Structure formats: C-alpha cells, structure tokens
Length: 370
Ligand SMILES: Nc1nc2c(ncn2[C@@H]2O[C@H](COP(=O)(O)OP(=O)(O)OP(=O)(O)O)[C@@H](O)[C@H]2O)c(=O)[nH]1
Image: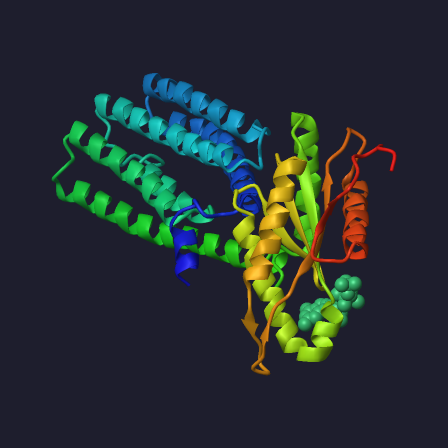
C-alpha cells in the first residue's frame, strides 16, 4: 500500500515499461488538445472581430495565430512518444503557450480599456487548470502544474490591480478548487493506469514481469543494444528437480519456492534497466542490457549464492532449500534476433542441467564453432 502511494506521489520508482505506457498516453492527449486548440484559437478570431474594435481585434488575431502555430508544432511533434521526459516537456509547453497567450491578451485588453471579463478570455486560467484532469500525472507533477497556473494568475492580478479585490480572491479561490478537483482526477487516472498496467504485465504469483512483457521488452532492448553497439545478456533460469520437489513437499511448497526465487532475482536485477521475469512454470528470465559475459556471470553466481543461503519453512513444517541451473547468452552480431538469442540461452541451460545442475553455462558466441 505504501509503495503504491509512493508511486502516485512521484515517478521515481516507476519502471521504464510503465513510463513508456504513461508517456504514450500523455503524448496522444497533448496531441489531441493541441489540435483542438489549433482549430478553436483560429476560429475565435471571428468572434474577436464581432466583439472588439478593429485595431484590437487584429492585434489579438496575431497573438491567436502565433499561439495556434505553437499548438500546431506541438500537435505535429512526433519524436520520442515513449520518453516520459519528452511527453512531460510537451505538456509543459502546452501550458506555457496557453498561459503566455492568456497573460498577453489580458494585458492588451486592459490597456485598451476593456475588462478582462470579456467573452472567451476570463475562462482561460480555469480552462488550463481543468485541462490537467485528462492527463495521468503524479501528485507532485499536478502540484507543480497547478502552482504554476495559480502563480501566473497571482502575478497578473498584482499587475492589473485586481489582487485583494473580492473578484480577484474569488478567482484565486476558484482556481485552487478546480486545481484540487482536476488534480484528484489526474492522480486517479494515474492510479488506474498503474493497476491496469500491473495486471496486464505482471505474473500474479511472483509479481515479476510476465512472459508477454519480457518478450516485448527483450525485443526493444535488443534493438537498442544493436543500434548503440552495447552488449546485452540474457539469463535463463530453471529450478532444479522441481517436479520431484512438488511431488515430495506439495504444490503449495512449490509456490513458496517460486516466490522466494523471484525475490532473489529482484534483489539481483539491481539497475533500473534490468528486467527479471517469469517465463512460465519454473522457468525465469533476466535481461541485462549493457552487460557482457563477465558481469552476467557474476549476476548468475549471485543468484546461485542467494538460493544457497535460503532455507524455507514449507506448510508441512519442513525446512527446504532449492537450486537453479542457468543458461547465459550474450547478444551476438547484427543478425541475431530474440528467437535465436533465447535458443542459445536454452541450449546453455540444457548444458548446465546435463553438467550436473546448480551451475551456469555461457552459450558459445554466435557463429563460434563448438
Ligand atoms: N508449485 C508449482 N509448480 C509448478 C508451477 N508451474 C510449473 N510447476 C511445476 O514445475 C515442474 C517442472 O518440472 P520439469 O520441467 O519436468 O523438470 P524438473 O523436475 O524441474 O527437472 P529438471 O528441470 O530437469 O531439473 C512441473 O512439475 C510443474 O508442475 C507453479 O506455478 N507452481
């Protein structure tokens, strides 16, 4: 529960796979809003012409066209949809464009002797803060965006002498209230996204990534490693004599071992880029981007040592221990894909089983003669 609350508060602990999902959601919503604003901002020029004298309406029209052009750039920005930093920056730019336009148009109108309550202008800060409701944001992100909008309103009230008046205080109060409601909706979206993401990508017994996620992530890690010329290792684990373990101690004891083994894997998948997953049954996989044979072998040894140190009390009251065999394959040349890499890891795993179990074997490099 505490971990989940922490995940709602800040993004620091979010996995990069979840960041991809959230980033894409932010990215597509910013794009939709940006397109809507391109159309609305441009169309509102006609309303300005009806409501304002010609000199001011044409000045405002230039501002609207500039704001629409900025929104168009945001709508057409297609690069890095899966990078959470890029998506948050796009959202920040959208809020900035709208805030700058609002502050500037208010200034123009007030200097021309108009009240800011003019149709289509007074609602701007409220629209910006309410817009936050459609984005899945952490509590800290919501606070940051809402504080920015309220601060801009505060400064513009001080500037145009509205601060301290009942109407100014009302606006600030309403903004804060809408900020709380929109923020709540926004954090709720994040919470739903987290729950759905976990259900779709985690193995229910062990809490590790499930096979589907491991496969998807392995594909993208392989492409990144090949592009960047970086090594990548996969470790395939299989618990030893697990069938007879189940037969001797019962399925419930077997489940306890699987959970404990998952804990050991998590402890050893130390970096944020490392992925530990359940491949199926009593088979597990670890993906270690950036690691070559020597480092991957050290991780394999650490996992074996973790198993040796573990002694579990099972429902029958017995103390039990377990071991694992490991096949390691290091990504080869440009032609190697996920299937071939996993096949080599599997062959190495079989060699470890044949060699007596409780050991690791590194697959010969792709193309090597054995
Ligand atoms: N308790 C439990 N057992 C499982 C689960 N999934 C698979 N198994 C068991 O894992 C066992 C797999 O055994 P095998 O692959 O035949 O081989 P092994 O006995 O581990 O022998 P080696 O792999 O040769 O060391 C089977 O008995 C499955 O029933 C699970 O979720 N819980």
